[in-house]
Image (cartoon, rainbow, N blue to C red; front, side, top):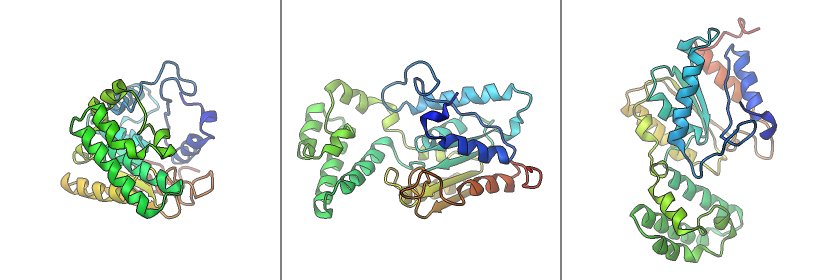
Length: 278
């Protein structure tokens, strides 16, 4: 179960929007967060989280008030990796709504995030291009099986940037590096699942997102769905919206965000009409 106090009510707003369209929602925390017990594993265990989603679907199917033909997945950020992974493993997923979803692997996303963090910290564009090239080479060494010593030598010129230490790029232990290097979650390509999706999908992005390269994601989504011969892909990019689809400098969603989701669901028969929902 999710505790709304831990996120300022972000998920409460989602639930209210879906409830207005006649849809029940289930939200749960990562282990150890909010009301959840246990401890969340180190790193980004997206494959394990996809299995959790499948367990939630099975539990929902047992509830008499739930229509098993209208079970869909909503995911934001890393959830945009997880939901498609679950959807290709289950015939019970009827639709997907994916928000600020990365189109590339976790390391590529970290690189994009790092470059934007450097820019936000005041690094000029000429210096930024040099730092980005150094970062790309370091990640290439890691992907190619290079040792922690090789990686450390490659990122040495970047030690002067505090934001890269905060992101964990220029600090760490050899053991942590090897674990990071070997885990399948960090090299998983999201388009592996996207190219197999048959479900109607709504993909939402904000054009001021500094955590996810939304332009690249849009291109990957379009290409992946074309390869899947899935023509039911809707992409919506909100101007002036950040990673959470908040307006810049605001703590609430931009106008039209909730209506875009509920309208899309109603148009495909997954939600009540506005008249029925009153």
